[in-house]
Amino acid sequence: MGPQMMEILTKRESERTCIGCRTRMPKNVLVRYALASGNRVVRDDGNIMPGRGAYVCNDPACLERAIKKGAFSRAFRVKADHSGLVEPDNG
Ligand SMILES: [Zn+2]
Image (cartoon, rainbow, N blue to C red; front, side, top):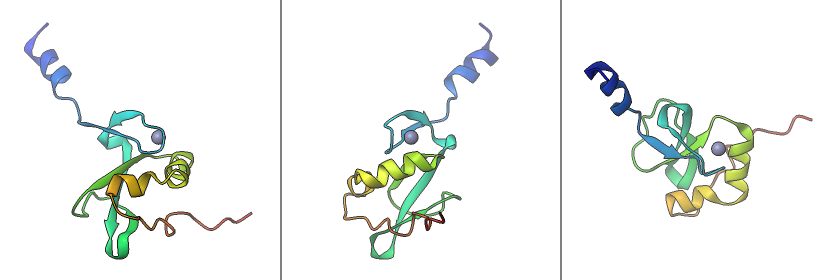
């Protein structure tokens, strides 16, 4: 195995666990959520929010699961307000 191949194998993106389905995935395929003022959970697309992040698959079902089981509160260790995350039910 050449040095180039070695580099590809060792230079893996760090992994995070989706708080919805508990699957470990490369950080770059997960959506990061962070805590804004008032313990509001906000989607942090640009990875710009400071502090602790919670990671969820880019899948509405996973987000819903995370909300339902209170995974955000557990991840942030506060009573997280995730009411702003759920889009209004249109139908
Ligand atoms: Zn997931």
